[in-house]
Structure formats: C-alpha cells, structure tokens
Length: 183
Image (cartoon, rainbow, N blue to C red):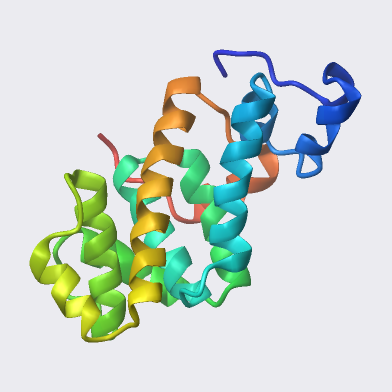
C-alpha cells in the first residue's frame, strides 16, 4: 500500500489537473508535489517521445533497471510498454539470461545496452570499457540519451520503492507472465 494517498483530478487545483491525464499510480502520488510531477514529466516525456535512442533499445535499458531493482511497478509497466516499441518475449527472456550472466543470443549492441544499464544501476555509472564499446556502435547523441535514460529510471525505481507505489490491476498480467526474481 502506498505511503501517501493516491490523488485524483478532483483532489488537485484546476491548473494541476492535467498532471493526471495519464491516470497511473505513479502520477497519482507525484501530484502531491505538482512542481516535482511537472519536472519529472518533462524528462520522462523527452525519454519516451524525444529521445534519439532506438525505442526498443530504450525499453530494454529501462527493463534492465526494473529487473535489477526488482521493481514490480517498473517491470510490469515497461513489459507492456516494451511490447509497443518492439520488445519481444524472446528479448525479455534474453534480458533475464543476461542479468544472470548467461548467454542470451542477443546482438552485441543489445548486450552492451543492457550492460550499460546494469552498470548505471549498480553504480557509480557506466564503466569506461562499456562506454568505449558503445561509442564504436552509436552516435554520441544516442549514447548520451542511453545514459540519461538509465540514470532517470534508476531514480524512478527508487521513487517507486520509497513511496511503495502499487501496481495497477491492469498491469498485473505482465508481472504474472514474467515474475521478478525473489530476494
């Protein structure tokens, strides 16, 4: 159960009701601070709609962070969103294998993107060797967008955990299809 009340549009001043145009639990908690919700939405919106990074790779990086954080909310939401951007069931299974240090059959760029996301999550950031390898495979703009994406979602999973935000019922099937590891 969330640590704060989930707000609805009726709970917000008229000038902030647009913050809940996407009425998901994360936004319903963030609107306790409309300014923070707006700032959060600007970067999240850029990552989703303005980033130059390939959308499938973006979602793979986000899923990697959600998997490592064992974040039911992030994982379930981005399994669904990932499907919308070309992530396949085989990709998800491969991501789990990569996370366990097993062979995945993914292309080199995909494996590097996942490694970068893992390194960003564990900290302090993407390792020099991984960064250099990615520089050989993507533009500096794409690489910057990848690092920003991984770092932003490291923050997202910490907000979700700190606020104990619940997974909406409509996202539970994705969590049931691909349960997070115990522990």
